[in-house]
Each structure stands twice: as structure tokens, then as C-alpha cells.
Length: 465
Image 1 (cartoon, rainbow, N blue to C red):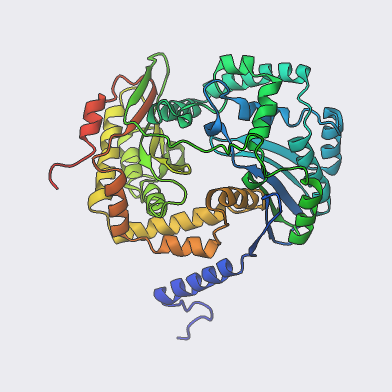
Image 2: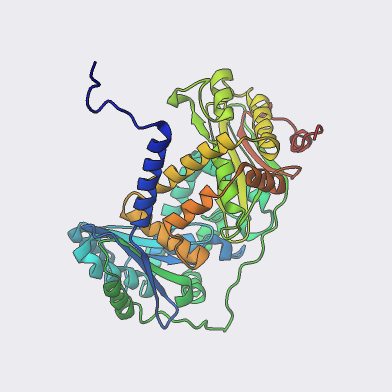
């Protein structure tokens, strides 16, 4: 009996070796990120994939963390005012030019970064850089436009209040980083939005939008030398000198184990987050903590899956109906972070869900297996590569990493660092950050069933060790 051609399978080991060799090859073939520093300190960083489209953007090392109590919300207000007309282009001119190019112009503000970026055809990069430089350097901040944007931001605030996940994360930051800039919201309080003046906006740009704190990032069909020439042409007005000679620095933001509960029994579901203090972007513990977060995983009851799910917490949630959904997170800032989990559940599910979460956290600290770590590492690597699918995510990655690490970590280096994580390194990191630590807790909705803080704190260690 002859064997059918093509049915012979490689032994399992050879298959995975062949696959990993192809994977290594793919990583090695990623185009390099080229970086040039201009005289003003502005960095130009790009990755040329030869695509017909491109994303170019300006990443500025400033956000709500650099604000004071009195001007909290100004960085976000500024982002809103950027597209409202400059000394060279009226708002209509700006919108028409972007539309005629078929481009997308966008911006966002986070706690530590402000970003303006454009997606366009590769032949329109020159125009896009011109527009980005114009809105950064020559925005008019007309009084009428400022008044109109106040209303827009207040409406945006109402929308954020409808998004309970955002509400919970704002509460979590407020209790975890009490009395520090990281504890404030990005949008700022209503009274600030109503009172921020044109002068506040002008001062904020003067104090923060300096060459050494800016990165012009490009990805897709971007020729690096061309981008450098464009940066020299259009960003020549950006200075590296601070007016008062005072360089803004960030204060360390102290973490406080504490809680906030907004109990509202009329709401259908409880939204809860619990986190310990994580580490900053550049801390070597970041990679083991990322793998640990992947191990806890995420789950949503619309996904199906049951007793055979890989994550223990997802298995229990599916089988015992502990929650509607959960997701673990590892949020990093320059010198600190939040490592934890957010979940949504029925009114009387909180105690059981929390018990399972803390059991899982203790297991991470004490007796986790190499097998699950391998799986989590593979998942993390897959997610890492999937997140870099397209010119905009790659451009974001370049901009963010240039501000966080002052370089772009090559994908194969990141892969090697994930690969180096072992069960022991996860246990060590979890022992350091999770075991016997005071967590921060934020809960909104029908949360009567959530155990009291002292009980939550008491479950952050095991007596049988």
C-alpha cells in the first residue's frame, strides 16, 4: 500500500523548529528604525516599509502629568484647539487641504504624552508635515473658538462619564496616586475647563513644546532623509531653550494602597478594578510583569469557551459564571505603573470573583508552571506583532518608544527579552510587586458584595508559605 504523496507530516519537533526559524527570519527582516537628531534637539525617527501610504506624527513628551491643579486639562484643551486655524490657514483651509489630500488628521492626549498625526499617501508627506508643524507653531487660539471648544470638551466629559470603564480607571488613578499629578484626570475638572484662558494655552506651549521633547515619527512609505529635510524646513522655529531657563520635570508620584466605592444599586452591573503598583517603562521587571498579565488573560462571556480555556481565571469565570468579562492590564508610566485587573459582573458576584482573582495572583507568586509561561510568552509575542499591523500602529510604536526609551527597541530584541522570561523570573517579579502589597481598588455600581478593604488586603498573601 503506497503512501499518498503529501500526507507525510514532519515530526512535531521539526515543525515547530521550522516555524520558529521562519518567525526569527521575519523579525530579522523588519526594516530598521532610523533616527536623526536636529540641532534643536528634535528627533526624527522613521521606518520605511515601502508602502503606498504613510503615517507621520509629532509625539510630544508632555501630558496631564505636567499640569498643576489650577491648569489641569490644559494639555487636552490645547489638542482640541490645534485644528481651529493658524496664522497661515483658517480652520476651513485646514480642513479642505486635509480632505483634498484624502488624509486623516488626528490627535490625542494621555497622562504623559500629547500626539498629533496624519495618515496620507506617501507623495503627500510633505504637505502633512507642513500642516503638523503649522498647527504646533502657529495656532491662533481665537477667543470665539476657545469658547466653542469649552462646550465641546464639556460634552466629551459627559460621554466619558457614560463609559464606565473610563470612569473606573480615572477613579483608580485618583486613589492610587492621591494628591499627585497622575491622580488627576486628563480632561480636568469642570471649573478648569470653564476658566482656561488663551494665555494658559500659550504659556503651556512655551513651557513644554521644545525640541528635545519632540519626536517626528514616520512609518510606511517614508524616505528617512526626505523626512529629515522636511523637519529642518518646517520645524526650524522650534527652540531647544526654555524661556525662564527652567526645564519642567516630573515629580515622583507616590502610590497609596486605598479604595474608592461609588455604590449605586440602580445600575445593572458592577464595574471594579484592583491594582498594585507596577513599574516604569524602562524597568527590567516590565517584561516579566507583561507576561504575568498575559497569564491572567482576559475573557468575555460572548467569546464562548468553557472549562478548556487556557487562563485559569477565564475557566472559572466561564464555568461558575463569576463575571461578564474581565481584562488584566499592565499600565506603565515613566517611573511607576498600575498592574491589575478590571471586571464587570452581576451585583452579587464580586466576592467570588475577587476570591478567584487573588487566588490566581498568589499562584503567580508561588507555584506557576513553565508550560503556562511558554503559552503566555507565545500569546504575548503574537499580540505584540498583531499590534504592529499597519502604518499607524508602527508610527505610534516609534513615537512612544522614542519618548520612553530614547530609542526604538527592535522587534527581535523585544522577542528575545520575552523569550528569556522563565517561571522563576515571573515568581520573583510577582513576589516583588504583588505579594503582601497594598492594592488600590475602584468600584462603581451595585458593589455591596465586594469585601471590605481589610479583607482584600489580607488576601494579598498566603499563610501556608
